[in-house]
Image 1 (cartoon, rainbow, N blue to C red):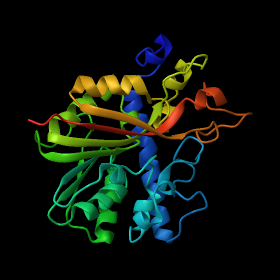
Image 2 (cartoon, rainbow, N blue to C red; image 1 turned 90 degrees about the vertical axis):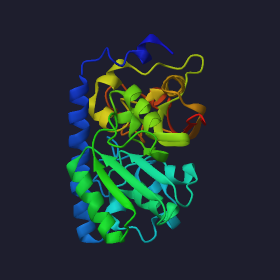
Image 3 (cartoon, helix red, strand yellow; image 1 turned 90 degrees about the horizontal axis):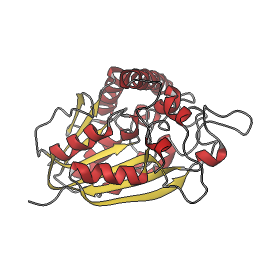
Length: 295
Protein backbone atom coordinates (compact mmCIF):
# COMPACT_ATOMS: atom_id res chain seq x y z
CA UNK A 1 0.00 0.00 0.00
CA UNK A 2 1.33 3.44 -0.86
CA UNK A 3 1.91 6.05 1.82
CA UNK A 4 -0.64 8.20 0.05
CA UNK A 5 -3.37 5.59 0.37
CA UNK A 6 -2.53 4.86 3.99
CA UNK A 7 -2.62 8.49 5.15
CA UNK A 8 -6.27 8.61 6.16
CA UNK A 9 -5.47 10.85 9.12
CA UNK A 10 -3.35 13.29 7.09
CA UNK A 11 -6.36 15.01 5.61
CA UNK A 12 -8.12 18.33 6.02
CA UNK A 13 -11.11 16.93 7.91
CA UNK A 14 -11.69 15.78 11.46
CA UNK A 15 -13.50 12.68 12.66
CA UNK A 16 -16.24 14.91 14.06
CA UNK A 17 -16.69 16.52 10.65
CA UNK A 18 -17.04 13.09 9.06
CA UNK A 19 -19.66 11.96 11.57
CA UNK A 20 -21.65 15.19 11.20
CA UNK A 21 -21.56 15.02 7.41
CA UNK A 22 -22.61 11.35 7.36
CA UNK A 23 -25.43 11.96 9.84
CA UNK A 24 -26.79 14.92 7.84
CA UNK A 25 -26.52 13.00 4.56
CA UNK A 26 -28.50 10.01 5.78
CA UNK A 27 -31.03 12.12 7.67
CA UNK A 28 -31.82 13.74 4.31
CA UNK A 29 -32.13 10.33 2.66
CA UNK A 30 -34.48 9.11 5.41
CA UNK A 31 -36.69 12.18 4.99
CA UNK A 32 -36.91 11.60 1.25
CA UNK A 33 -37.61 7.90 1.73
CA UNK A 34 -40.52 8.72 4.03
CA UNK A 35 -41.87 11.12 1.40
CA UNK A 36 -41.56 8.34 -1.18
CA UNK A 37 -43.40 5.89 1.08
CA UNK A 38 -46.21 8.43 1.43
CA UNK A 39 -46.63 8.62 -2.36
CA UNK A 40 -46.79 4.82 -2.73
CA UNK A 41 -44.47 4.82 -5.78
CA UNK A 42 -40.71 4.63 -6.18
CA UNK A 43 -39.25 7.51 -8.21
CA UNK A 44 -37.40 7.07 -11.49
CA UNK A 45 -34.02 6.74 -9.75
CA UNK A 46 -35.34 3.57 -8.11
CA UNK A 47 -33.98 4.28 -4.66
CA UNK A 48 -36.22 6.98 -3.29
CA UNK A 49 -33.32 9.16 -2.27
CA UNK A 50 -33.49 11.74 -5.03
CA UNK A 51 -29.98 10.98 -6.30
CA UNK A 52 -28.42 10.81 -2.84
CA UNK A 53 -27.51 7.10 -2.79
CA UNK A 54 -24.04 8.06 -3.97
CA UNK A 55 -22.73 11.53 -4.81
CA UNK A 56 -24.26 11.26 -8.26
CA UNK A 57 -26.97 8.68 -7.66
CA UNK A 58 -24.93 6.09 -9.60
CA UNK A 59 -25.88 2.47 -10.22
CA UNK A 60 -24.84 -0.46 -8.06
CA UNK A 61 -26.32 0.97 -4.86
CA UNK A 62 -29.72 0.84 -3.18
CA UNK A 63 -32.59 -1.62 -3.61
CA UNK A 64 -31.44 -2.57 -7.11
CA UNK A 65 -28.77 -4.87 -5.61
CA UNK A 66 -31.46 -7.15 -4.09
CA UNK A 67 -33.36 -9.94 -5.79
CA UNK A 68 -37.02 -9.21 -6.43
CA UNK A 69 -37.91 -12.14 -4.17
CA UNK A 70 -36.13 -10.38 -1.28
CA UNK A 71 -38.15 -7.22 -1.77
CA UNK A 72 -41.59 -8.83 -1.95
CA UNK A 73 -43.83 -7.91 0.98
CA UNK A 74 -41.34 -5.33 2.33
CA UNK A 75 -42.71 -1.84 3.04
CA UNK A 76 -41.98 0.72 0.36
CA UNK A 77 -40.19 2.86 2.93
CA UNK A 78 -37.65 0.09 3.56
CA UNK A 79 -36.97 -0.27 -0.16
CA UNK A 80 -36.76 3.50 -0.68
CA UNK A 81 -34.41 3.88 2.28
CA UNK A 82 -31.99 1.19 1.11
CA UNK A 83 -28.49 2.57 0.49
CA UNK A 84 -26.41 -0.61 0.45
CA UNK A 85 -23.98 -2.03 -2.09
CA UNK A 86 -24.90 -5.70 -1.62
CA UNK A 87 -27.13 -8.17 0.21
CA UNK A 88 -25.37 -9.29 3.40
CA UNK A 89 -28.42 -11.25 4.58
CA UNK A 90 -27.85 -13.72 1.74
CA UNK A 91 -24.10 -13.65 2.31
CA UNK A 92 -24.47 -14.64 5.96
CA UNK A 93 -26.65 -17.74 5.38
CA UNK A 94 -28.78 -17.04 8.43
CA UNK A 95 -30.45 -19.87 10.36
CA UNK A 96 -33.56 -20.28 12.49
CA UNK A 97 -33.08 -19.08 16.05
CA UNK A 98 -29.97 -16.96 15.51
CA UNK A 99 -29.43 -13.47 16.92
CA UNK A 100 -28.37 -10.97 14.26
CA UNK A 101 -27.04 -7.42 14.51
CA UNK A 102 -27.00 -5.02 11.55
CA UNK A 103 -24.41 -2.24 11.96
CA UNK A 104 -25.77 0.95 10.44
CA UNK A 105 -29.26 -0.39 9.80
CA UNK A 106 -30.68 2.66 8.05
CA UNK A 107 -34.28 2.18 6.93
CA UNK A 108 -34.20 -1.40 8.18
CA UNK A 109 -34.22 -3.44 4.97
CA UNK A 110 -31.54 -5.91 6.09
CA UNK A 111 -32.99 -6.18 9.60
CA UNK A 112 -36.42 -7.06 8.25
CA UNK A 113 -34.94 -9.59 5.82
CA UNK A 114 -32.88 -11.09 8.66
CA UNK A 115 -35.96 -11.35 10.87
CA UNK A 116 -37.63 -13.49 8.20
CA UNK A 117 -34.67 -15.85 8.06
CA UNK A 118 -34.10 -16.33 11.80
CA UNK A 119 -37.81 -16.75 12.56
CA UNK A 120 -39.67 -16.06 15.78
CA UNK A 121 -37.15 -18.05 17.81
CA UNK A 122 -34.42 -15.66 16.67
CA UNK A 123 -33.97 -11.90 16.85
CA UNK A 124 -32.66 -9.14 14.60
CA UNK A 125 -31.19 -5.92 16.00
CA UNK A 126 -30.55 -2.80 13.98
CA UNK A 127 -28.09 -0.14 15.18
CA UNK A 128 -28.06 3.39 13.75
CA UNK A 129 -26.96 6.84 14.95
CA UNK A 130 -29.41 8.91 12.90
CA UNK A 131 -32.78 9.73 14.49
CA UNK A 132 -34.49 10.14 11.13
CA UNK A 133 -33.33 6.70 9.98
CA UNK A 134 -34.45 5.09 13.23
CA UNK A 135 -37.88 6.68 12.88
CA UNK A 136 -38.13 5.40 9.31
CA UNK A 137 -36.98 1.91 10.34
CA UNK A 138 -39.50 1.66 13.17
CA UNK A 139 -42.29 2.77 10.83
CA UNK A 140 -41.20 0.08 8.38
CA UNK A 141 -41.16 -2.53 11.15
CA UNK A 142 -44.72 -1.58 12.15
CA UNK A 143 -45.92 -1.74 8.54
CA UNK A 144 -44.27 -5.14 8.09
CA UNK A 145 -45.82 -6.45 11.31
CA UNK A 146 -42.49 -7.94 12.43
CA UNK A 147 -42.08 -8.53 16.16
CA UNK A 148 -38.64 -10.17 16.47
CA UNK A 149 -36.83 -6.89 15.67
CA UNK A 150 -35.37 -4.12 17.83
CA UNK A 151 -33.79 -0.91 16.56
CA UNK A 152 -31.14 0.65 18.82
CA UNK A 153 -29.68 4.15 18.74
CA UNK A 154 -25.90 4.32 18.90
CA UNK A 155 -22.59 4.43 17.09
CA UNK A 156 -21.12 1.33 15.46
CA UNK A 157 -17.86 2.19 17.27
CA UNK A 158 -19.62 1.58 20.63
CA UNK A 159 -22.29 -1.12 20.28
CA UNK A 160 -24.90 -1.00 23.10
CA UNK A 161 -25.07 -4.79 23.55
CA UNK A 162 -23.32 -7.16 25.99
CA UNK A 163 -20.24 -9.24 25.21
CA UNK A 164 -20.82 -12.47 23.27
CA UNK A 165 -24.53 -11.77 22.72
CA UNK A 166 -24.81 -12.07 18.92
CA UNK A 167 -24.40 -14.96 16.46
CA UNK A 168 -24.05 -12.93 13.26
CA UNK A 169 -23.12 -9.34 12.45
CA UNK A 170 -24.20 -7.80 9.15
CA UNK A 171 -23.35 -4.44 7.66
CA UNK A 172 -24.21 -2.98 4.29
CA UNK A 173 -21.99 -0.19 3.00
CA UNK A 174 -21.57 1.38 6.46
CA UNK A 175 -18.18 0.35 7.89
CA UNK A 176 -16.54 2.54 5.23
CA UNK A 177 -18.47 5.54 6.65
CA UNK A 178 -16.79 5.31 10.06
CA UNK A 179 -13.68 7.40 10.77
CA UNK A 180 -12.51 4.70 13.24
CA UNK A 181 -12.68 1.29 11.58
CA UNK A 182 -10.49 -0.31 14.26
CA UNK A 183 -13.08 0.53 16.91
CA UNK A 184 -15.90 -0.83 14.72
CA UNK A 185 -14.18 -4.17 14.16
CA UNK A 186 -13.08 -4.45 17.80
CA UNK A 187 -16.67 -3.90 18.93
CA UNK A 188 -17.97 -6.40 16.38
CA UNK A 189 -15.55 -9.00 17.73
CA UNK A 190 -16.61 -8.21 21.33
CA UNK A 191 -20.33 -8.76 20.85
CA UNK A 192 -20.00 -11.88 18.67
CA UNK A 193 -20.16 -15.29 20.31
CA UNK A 194 -17.57 -18.01 19.88
CA UNK A 195 -17.61 -19.04 16.22
CA UNK A 196 -19.72 -15.98 15.35
CA UNK A 197 -19.90 -14.76 11.78
CA UNK A 198 -19.20 -11.35 10.26
CA UNK A 199 -20.81 -10.68 6.87
CA UNK A 200 -20.22 -7.23 5.41
CA UNK A 201 -21.09 -5.79 2.02
CA UNK A 202 -18.82 -2.79 1.58
CA UNK A 203 -17.10 -0.47 -0.84
CA UNK A 204 -13.42 -1.45 -0.86
CA UNK A 205 -10.35 -0.26 -2.75
CA UNK A 206 -8.69 -3.02 -4.76
CA UNK A 207 -5.06 -3.68 -3.99
CA UNK A 208 -3.16 -1.95 -6.82
CA UNK A 209 -1.80 -3.72 -9.84
CA UNK A 210 1.51 -2.51 -11.31
CA UNK A 211 1.14 0.98 -12.76
CA UNK A 212 -2.30 1.69 -11.28
CA UNK A 213 -2.82 5.11 -9.69
CA UNK A 214 -3.09 5.63 -5.95
CA UNK A 215 -6.29 7.03 -4.51
CA UNK A 216 -5.46 10.72 -4.00
CA UNK A 217 -5.79 12.50 -0.68
CA UNK A 218 -8.35 14.81 -2.28
CA UNK A 219 -10.81 11.90 -2.27
CA UNK A 220 -10.18 11.33 1.45
CA UNK A 221 -10.72 15.02 2.23
CA UNK A 222 -14.02 15.32 0.35
CA UNK A 223 -16.87 14.93 2.86
CA UNK A 224 -19.43 14.38 0.09
CA UNK A 225 -17.38 11.46 -1.24
CA UNK A 226 -16.97 10.14 2.32
CA UNK A 227 -20.74 10.29 2.92
CA UNK A 228 -21.22 8.58 -0.43
CA UNK A 229 -19.19 5.50 0.67
CA UNK A 230 -16.09 6.44 -1.35
CA UNK A 231 -13.77 8.67 0.69
CA UNK A 232 -13.57 6.35 3.70
CA UNK A 233 -13.14 3.05 1.88
CA UNK A 234 -10.33 0.77 3.03
CA UNK A 235 -7.87 -0.90 0.72
CA UNK A 236 -8.43 -4.67 0.70
CA UNK A 237 -5.06 -5.49 2.30
CA UNK A 238 -5.72 -2.92 5.03
CA UNK A 239 -9.17 -4.40 5.67
CA UNK A 240 -7.64 -7.87 6.13
CA UNK A 241 -5.03 -6.51 8.54
CA UNK A 242 -7.59 -4.67 10.65
CA UNK A 243 -9.85 -7.73 10.83
CA UNK A 244 -6.95 -9.94 11.91
CA UNK A 245 -5.81 -7.38 14.49
CA UNK A 246 -9.32 -7.34 15.97
CA UNK A 247 -9.07 -11.13 16.39
CA UNK A 248 -11.04 -12.45 13.39
CA UNK A 249 -10.08 -15.57 11.46
CA UNK A 250 -11.16 -17.14 8.13
CA UNK A 251 -11.01 -13.70 6.50
CA UNK A 252 -12.21 -13.43 2.89
CA UNK A 253 -12.73 -10.41 0.65
CA UNK A 254 -14.57 -11.23 -2.59
CA UNK A 255 -14.94 -8.70 -5.39
CA UNK A 256 -18.55 -8.48 -6.56
CA UNK A 257 -18.59 -5.44 -8.81
CA UNK A 258 -15.98 -3.02 -10.11
CA UNK A 259 -17.24 0.56 -10.18
CA UNK A 260 -16.91 3.13 -12.92
CA UNK A 261 -16.57 6.89 -12.64
CA UNK A 262 -20.25 7.22 -13.54
CA UNK A 263 -21.22 4.80 -10.75
CA UNK A 264 -19.42 7.06 -8.28
CA UNK A 265 -21.13 10.21 -9.47
CA UNK A 266 -18.86 11.57 -12.18
CA UNK A 267 -18.51 11.94 -15.92
CA UNK A 268 -15.52 12.46 -18.19
CA UNK A 269 -16.27 16.21 -18.14
CA UNK A 270 -17.20 16.61 -14.47
CA UNK A 271 -15.83 14.34 -11.77
CA UNK A 272 -15.94 14.56 -7.96
CA UNK A 273 -12.85 15.91 -6.26
CA UNK A 274 -9.81 13.72 -6.98
CA UNK A 275 -11.64 11.05 -9.02
CA UNK A 276 -10.69 9.98 -12.52
CA UNK A 277 -11.88 6.94 -14.45
CA UNK A 278 -8.66 5.12 -13.54
CA UNK A 279 -9.01 5.96 -9.84
CA UNK A 280 -12.71 5.03 -9.82
CA UNK A 281 -11.76 1.62 -11.25
CA UNK A 282 -9.91 0.89 -8.00
CA UNK A 283 -13.23 0.92 -6.09
CA UNK A 284 -15.24 -2.28 -5.84
CA UNK A 285 -18.32 -3.65 -4.14
CA UNK A 286 -17.06 -6.54 -2.03
CA UNK A 287 -18.28 -9.26 0.29
CA UNK A 288 -16.18 -9.32 3.46
CA UNK A 289 -16.43 -12.49 5.54
CA UNK A 290 -14.77 -13.46 8.83
CA UNK A 291 -15.34 -15.48 12.01
CA UNK A 292 -14.47 -15.35 15.67
CA UNK A 293 -12.39 -18.33 16.87
CA UNK A 294 -14.30 -21.16 18.53
CA UNK A 295 -13.63 -21.48 22.25
